[in-house]
Length: 468
Image (cartoon, rainbow, N blue to C red; front, side, top):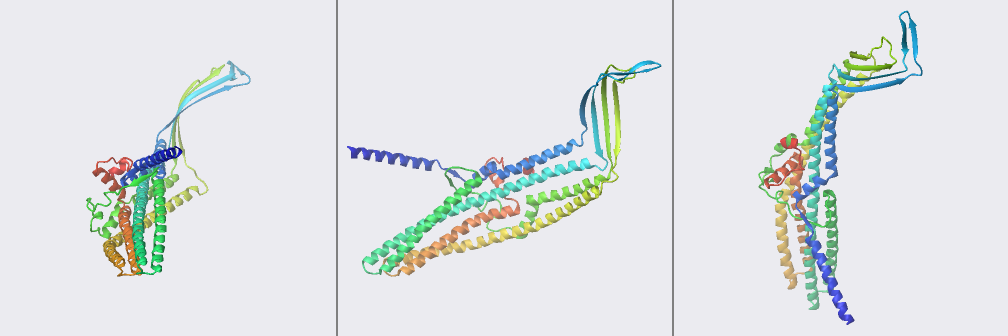
């Protein structure tokens, strides 16, 4: 009876364990590259920081506008004196110090530099918003490329696990064939020991590739911001060679055309161009210090005294016009102008340096993609030849027509061919996106692809960037 109860308990435990595993597998989310793009842009801290920079730039514009508008203020005052004081004259007595007094009023004031510094500052704030929006675009584009790199790392690691598993299966067959041939005396024991050693190494390699896969998935989950187990599915548009863009077709665009496109599309270059314009405006802003400042103020003042004198004026309305020009500031104005001119020169140099870097980046990505494209066909042929060679040598070993060295060499060639083709295939897909990023069209291509499949493109670009 006790044995029967133990069996029942074991069956129930195994049932729930199996159900738990099946439930966990079925509950694993499956993501495409497009899904990861969307989730990453929604949850990325870096994108959020860049978005806040855009908001700060807009608030800076509000602050700059405030200097162009008059300032309206109200004020009030109450004074209590220690004692009242009177004075006598031929006309009688009058109060020279009341017991208490109060006053309140409204003031309207506007101060403007005749050099237009406030207007210049407002123009700078508007350009700063444009620059921050391009910076946000750059952050998003760089982030989705980072997601793509991690995505293909996981796929490549997953394929490496499959390759390692197939290698273990081949070596198990080789080990079993060696056992059979040893039993009939066709090979020595060293052949079996060699087979066992190769199998042990393949099993260790399988464990290593599985750990690499787990690490790659953890990195991807961290970058995107997802939790729990998940699976990946191959993206369709990055693998489709005919989506209406020559960059994904069989023939690449000429390198010169790609460089021209990069000069036109790269958001970093657009942002740096705006920074050049801002630097020019800052020179004008600094030179505005050499112009006087005109201030206009209008005041309404209401006063009360207790007791009041016969000559007390209880209400006043007056205006003030003031022109201020500092004669000596210890060289401050000249230093600020020279500093602004130096920053303008710095912005020009930065812009020119960025143009050169982008040209090199485009050429580097183009050559890398061209190299991968050129080697893919050769690696595919090499894998086909290696597979046929292994099948032939394996059969020959089974029938005693080849020795163990031939089998090991054929398997090593097949394994290396599979690994090289695996790396080349995913590197080619990644370098397609790298070239897109280098030309500044990656994010635009992602958004247009989502539009073609009927998806919403919110969270990818702002309205102004869509219009651009």
